[in-house]
Length: 163
Image 1: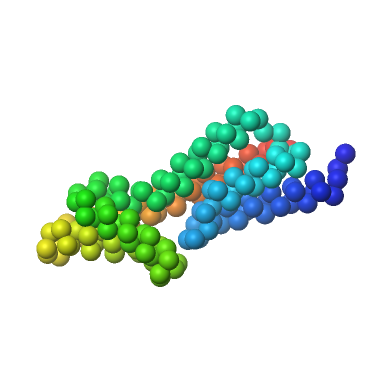
Image 2 (image 1 turned 45 degrees about the vertical axis):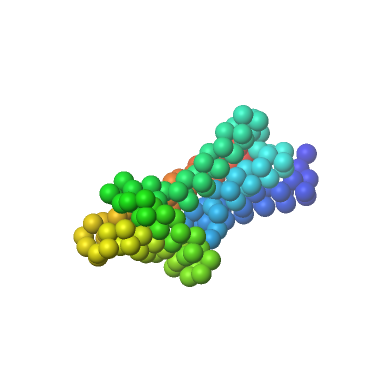
């Protein structure tokens, strides 16, 4: 039996899933967590049909992707030959950019932070410093791609559950 509350919850679930997909690209919107809440709302509506294991696994994936998005810039800075100072600078640039220069600070904060961190470490501005900062910048795009894929798959499963 279809109820008004059930229909409302299904609509809410899909709104959350779409906001999650948008949030995978738009800084400051935590895409995968919002999409996961959409899955939970769909399950609560009675139309999800997801198993407990499915929801737990996607909960773990959501947490992992969200945490990874914050640590990728510092990992990439290190992978591109950066020092610990570049990794710390990249992370600090992300955090400061998140609160101070939103939304551009979230995009360019890791780059600037890694650049400053590596510059302080090397005491000179050169090709290596920019290479490390580029690594942090690429990490932002890698994280965005992973969030987009994760949110998109959750939306796919929600659509499949409805049909």
